Image 1 (cartoon, rainbow, N blue to C red):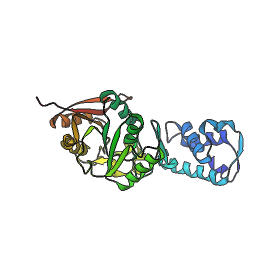
Image 2 (image 1 turned 90 degrees about the horizontal axis):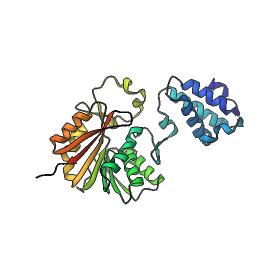
Image 3 (image 1 turned 90 degrees about the vertical axis):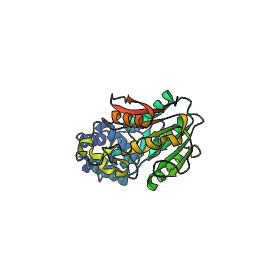
Image 4 (image 1 turned 60 degrees about the vertical axis):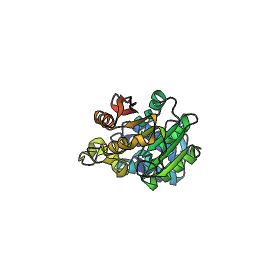
Length: 290
């Protein structure tokens, strides 16, 4: 059991990792990987070097930190909040309970930009949260510039810290705003992963117990989760160049309705599947007036 290690300074890392993995086997799909991530983080040992050691002397405080992390994980606290960061494409992003944890499928938005808007250079990221999308655009799209908005001051604080940590401060402007920036600038592409869980959803545990730790403002929306798509698509043309477009991440079974909302606002829209085969993204372009 993990508790047996709490008073020890000499630890067998392989056994420690196995005990942690056993504790987590009913909590995560990959307990072995999570145990290694936790050990690597709190013991300050590179994950690839963990098993180079057999018995190793470790400060009791670090061992206790590992134990506390496991206790939090067993209470459904997301691993990313426990260790304080989330890898996202080529970035390492700081995360805490002020921001939504970036999902793996969200990484695909950058590939969609490159595929459907290869010449785009100016971007608006609505609801930036940790800054994952905006900073990935800045990191990967040459000569790009991005404005990133959020209604949460706390979220913007994290996003700005992530920009600094990833040396991207000069390529993204963060703005406190309710969706759109105060100045009516024009952009090539608007991207958004807005809150899309139906605010009246009473079966949240079916989605994930972990979302109870995430900021509600980043998760829930009215009108069956479609509220922010409606607001953004209604005003988007004021912020887009004539050949501009939008890319949304959408919730399960929402793609068809978001496409319809876009079409009703004079956009040509279509949905795309994520790597798991789920309709996860909607791409819209302005309809050219004949």
